[in-house]
Length: 258
Ligand SMILES: [Fe+2]
Image 1: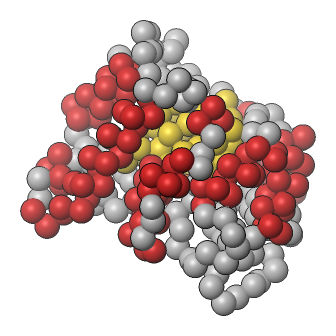
Image 2: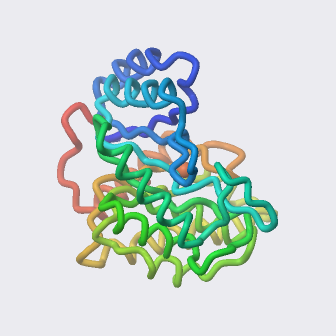
């Protein structure tokens, strides 16, 4: 492992505990995964929330904060703050304004993630089109979550290839890749999980062949949504080697685990 992703919500009640965890990894560089900046909201998060996230980033050798582009969008309700209608011009512009303002006072850059679509689309943009417009407008990187595309497809049906085609590959800094256990994939009742996992691995291999696609990190989601049991250490290591070879990483980062 060359980099680790910390989930900000895990440390909400004791942000300084992250320093202990970080030290226990031997000082691996990290990224902080968060949704607490509420980038799609007109109402901004309280100062203490921002202070807490910034403190976590400062004590964990955080290279960038990965924010969800939204936990946003409802079919019928416009809450005015957190729940803006998904895919609209107004929401897209709000993301850009908020991202730019947050980045101006952050110890690290931000990247934005395509969210799982669990509400109906209201505006003209699908998830990845909006991610592209927000990242371009705010001049930030993208966290392309193959897991979230799979989740979105399970809710609404989604043209996966069309979604990915909307992503400017040269802005992708990070990938989220589901890594279920092999025993799960062999379960006859989990054919969909098996197909989805194969799709994710094959899609990443295809993207890796694109000259513009050079993410800095592929984060293996060992405990991904919809994955009831964890991959074994051997399976994770095999997947890590596969990812390194695909991205032509010759040597793990300093402090990386072999
Ligand atoms: Fe996420």
